[in-house]
Length: 308
Length: 81
Image (cartoon, rainbow over all chains, first blue to last red; front, side):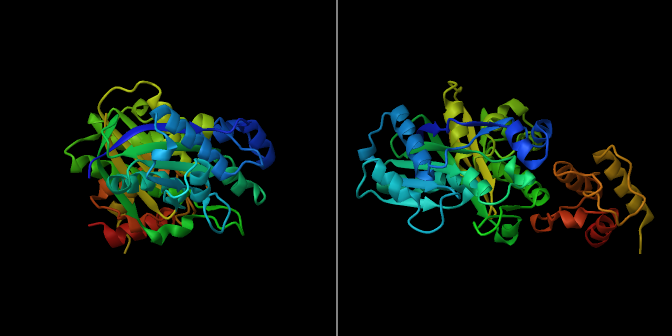
């Protein structure tokens, strides 16, 4: 199945929440937050803004950038782990607000790795359904504010949404290969269910991510007889700037080759991969191989290799 | 039975990963004492793999296995050649 990435879109809430504001609420300093995460500020949505609101805005930005009419979409996929519990998930509302009344819409409630899984699913589905809009949207502040703030997690997360258009029609980046993995034996190290605060064993999460991200990237590259040094840009889930540096070191590539905007937006979970791609793509990136990779709760992780 | 050479090599690995003094108590948590943080831990595991020519499988990527000198010695006794 040949599929292409045609372009990306993004949306960030207006309200900037600087480290100082979080630090005052969790009895830490702004400098400490930046030192452990690389984050200087994040965006938090208004209480009246929903995950679907963020998703629709990113979707519309993606459709505008790619020049695609919503009415021509064959499938809508919405990834995210912060929508209110229950059903239906936000995908149905997003499709309806894009003016679609019979186009299939699918939720992927995977949190951080959700957008990557959505992209890989889109690659498989594009030939059958036509153009696929993949959205990652999160209101992580709702998760944080649902309980007293925990300094270990409150400092990390932000709100936002990213989107990508995947199609069987030739486009800007040809998707060459993908790998996905899941391992439920570590599902307790990062979990949330609304009845209690977000649980994160930071030591375990970083240890797993520091191994699994480079491993998945090297796996997808090896399948196409490429090495990390061939790749022009690595677009990763923006979990923590220190982790991005660690992945660059493991891959043996200069840190600037791993795109990072985590300082400005924090960790926006499933939205971060496509927000990073949307920003990166505005910089007129050079042709060549590009790797998308994500890791998150589950555990779920993987990588996608494209060539521009 | 404790292996003096293995212990010496383990302590050398730890000194490479952290610049802080190693604890006198082998049971002391290296994380709670601040000797290791979340980003030093992957470096430590990689350094152990290299020094002892072993591969720590993902299922063993549990910080508790590397939480103290005693626990690392136990892990190496079981897995290192």
